[in-house]
Length: 480
Image (tube, rainbow, N blue to C red; front, side, top):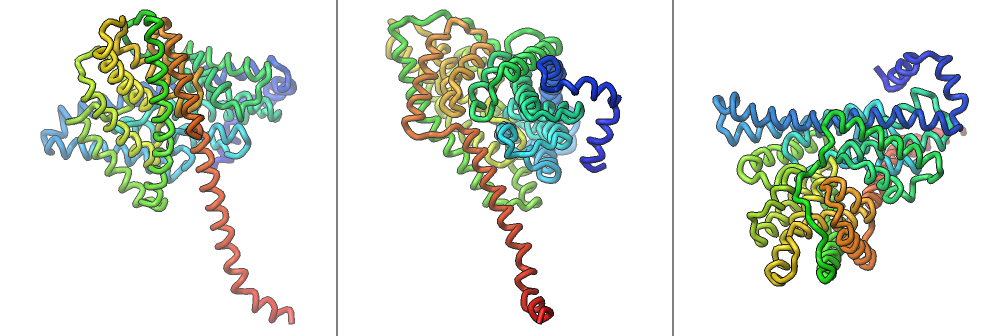
């Protein structure tokens, strides 16, 4: 079935009279808010079950290794093949059916909110869901928040199309509401989901009382669905820290400065890694799948021998804060995860970068905390405080959304007493990143996508002109 046929069949499943009566007032607040309820419910549903699907694939991969395939193949070869196949599924679905589903997907939603990118929801939702299952399930260093934000935004556009919403402001509000619901469902963080749209997407978001209400309602409904399916506990189980001494706040500012410097470097490395892989496969499908399968297979091996540098990293955060790691080892792990993050995200796999960044912030923050604790033992501070501050600071420095980062970390870890050091660390990171001329990561990725599309359109136009040039003499001869 073509995309037009799919949309046509979905539209005709709802009685026309009902649609027309409901949407004859699509400019009025009540219809927008009711539609945002539907968007939030569906975003929470698909985000929650996407998480379960990724865990199911990861668990089955381990079971296959331990029970069945090892009896036929050596352990290393079996691990390589399973993860390579899972990764190839993700790369193939993306390249064959929906190239815009590659990577995070958040720049695509931002571009759509600006009217510069299409939202082919009938392709994005299945490709991002099943492609993300393969890529994340293979053990690659990717997060699920990018896919859930893109799928949430796609759901917002789907609801607009199904209910024949013609008002552009309403369509825009539902798209933003879906993005907020998607992020909420990824991290059980409704405040962060709302603030992400208002703060990070501020250049694209059309702020009105109706649009902000739609975003809030969608986030709330998505969170209710998430908690009904997964429980109400925080996503990350960590110690509950008390407020640090006021004399130690300067150390949190210093940590923020360091993350501000690193954030600019990290964003630059992300775009360079994407350029490297583009030159490596030249968008050729066979090369693309060969590169992707090789990466996935290698991460299957690393899952056996170096699991700390694989996966999104959310599971790693509580392990770090429980202690038992030396500062030197954490810094080595920090460097290792930088490399693996650049490889996985730069290769074009369908997955996000939120979770890997949070893990990086935790690693460097906890190492910094250990060093500070040894240098100033008289201060009543624990290294885990700097780990939590580091999570928010790296997010603030790269995404350039400090309030979102603060709320996200607090909601994920339930450490409300660290609000002041989080603010200081994140503010320091943002200020220094701006002083160094760094740009927000998603803005950079969107500009890169638009530039790439423009070049492709120019190449296509050039190839279309070649026959016209060759046939020009014949045309003149016929005229004469």
